[in-house]
Image (cartoon, rainbow, N blue to C red):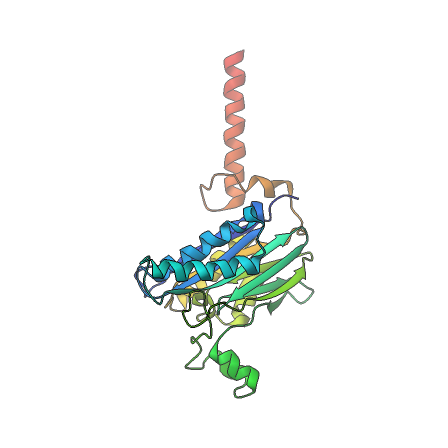
Length: 283
């Protein structure tokens, strides 16, 4: 099975002077992750980078995703103790691991995973992860309703994170699923979900033709809505999605115009010209 088609983007946003987010994209290993660092300049980005680097080692060490996330928690704590970064730094994480047609999503904190499925009505958006947040606790207890979550003043208070000094081991939540045709999984930091509501995310995914289109459209929407935080987005396509012969070409086709169809035409024209030059030189 060829590597899954995916696209990843990260931006510091319009209000921050540095990017504490980090992402891992390893299609050949079937592993993707988004980490949202906390702790300020030269701390949050250190924590999220430690999470990324720890997870990147998981396939070669044959580590389960949950265990790798637990290792990342220990690594961030140890780094702070050794003066790397800063005391109190931390990170959220949401990660996707794919093996064949099966997938697993694991997370700590409030970075999210969504499943987008195309259907007869356009598409359906399902949130796979459940935030480890104070507001989610209020919702689960019935203290607030679902319509109050997105606008609650304490929506960004999380109940656990990678590197938290208050807990020896983080509780990693996971969901498992089996890929179906015409599905994407979206991983993102709260820089997207704080700016763009789920209904708008669903519409943007419906209007997108490829993971690259989807990631760029979501990023543009988050920036246009204020971009008050760092924003990281990954879109991963199901291995069952139909692929045209040109879809494999797109992975290594040079981007010239920014339009895949035009770049393909230019590339074919260049190859044709080269073939003619070689022919004329030989005769």
